[in-house]
Length: 636
Ligand code: WTA
Image 1 (cartoon, rainbow, N blue to C red):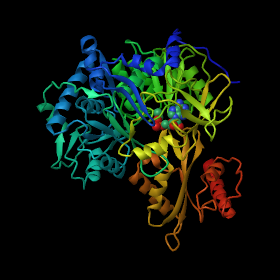
Image 2 (tube, helix red, strand yellow; image 1 turned 180 degrees about the vertical axis):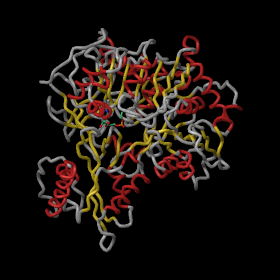
Image 3 (cartoon, rainbow, N blue to C red; image 1 turned 90 degrees about the horizontal axis):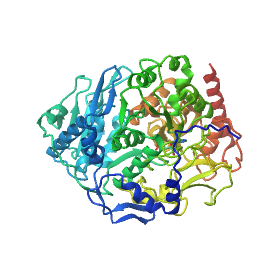
Image 4 (tube, rainbow, N blue to C red; image 1 turned 60 degrees about the vertical axis):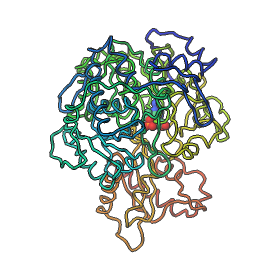
């Protein structure tokens, strides 16, 4: 029986859950009333499985709800307290942000951007990134932000798939003191794309760049743009953004989010989970290139008129104290980060955080991967000084917002380290077996979401069939997220990681299929299989097994380096394997499928289990030998 922690913030609302249980549709209708609508919906939910239409007929604008609604009372309140990696800082009030967004929105219009056009944004963590997103949403353009660590070929695929008319980038961005040359990457990515009309270039690092015919400088556009741009009243279902994320097959898929439902989900979960008050200083360490940044750096805090810290660089740069320094400097009261970051901080030792004044903190959160109970307890004791609740929030790019989390802004319940506790009100989740039947308490099964929820993705960009297959084909009328979970005797959920071929490396989602096809596209490679092995800091790391073609290069350190360079070039540094092993064959079933289960088992030192379907037992031995070699080398 795990220890429980009785820690709350004095909120004891039971009515909210009750009303969500009795009629979840009207419940979400009530929640949506907290937002500003230009015209109200006729129907809260139109559910034609697996397509949900939330707030049908309602007209709304995300940028209006993030900015205009605060101009009366909070115009001079800081919206963003920005800290550059090099120690620079900037404060943008709600008025500053509003003005900048309107100017950029006018600039986009002047370049011919219209409602529903796509705009790709490839910027570092600077205030211009949320400004660009909000400028798009103001005029109804659909933004598609690409994480600034992705390579030219990844960004090319995303620009091509979304057919973006405009790309917004910067000359460069800072990362660990180095300049990442973003503009060069974009130049390479859009070489053959006539449909990209213009590239808007922000000067951030002032490194030298080539200015091409399509390029427009951010500063020139802003200088010429007027300050007034009315927010466009958009349908509730208007596509707010596409965010590409890795799955089990092929290239990353474009998760498409709408407007009214998504904003409703964010508004409610931000309030319940973070207990947000006007006096808070919120700090979420996620990069805006990922969904956590979209939802809980950009939209949710701004909907609430909150003040937030936005940090540009690596969390341990220039040294291990950086995050605690930022918290002390800005008097952060709510801190939201990842288990990977916490494991890293924990390894650096308690003296570092103990030498900073962290007394402003009143609530802590984590997201992105399971948190080990001992890390949870460290976070609770050393960072929260045993007085702050910790919210372990489970959700996905596809869910738009939090789905399972303690909600100290709503209620006080005992916390169990490592458990996300309960689904948020109005969200219905079970743990089921292969057939879809609920499993008994404390039994591992698959997580399923049984009813539509407002933050739910609309579909996959341009591919309704894939949307149906990926999420709705395993169980009838239930959404399948691809996670294992346990529900314990108190009804608490414990998330156990992915049940499919998706890896979570340092909280980043990486598809094994995408990685394998990248490796196989090397001319010397015949076959490849990729899996994750546990890692003390990153949660898991990537291991790749490679079979070379006959009569090609022999296994060598050079070839390994070449393959790693290829992965970094085709996908990005986050997909770099920790180790590549050359083997002469891969374990396969008689029907020719690679037995990934076996690779995983070998790689995690688990029991191998039933291998009777294996075509060639020698392959198991070989992969096992390769892994033992890895373990030895890791001990060194
Ligand atoms: C995992 C990130 C355990 C899970 C917001 C999910 C978690 C995937 C948690 C989505 C958590 C996220 N505990 N696992 N609190 N939060 N996950 O799309 O496997 O990058 O399916 O969204 O992260 O990753 P994504």
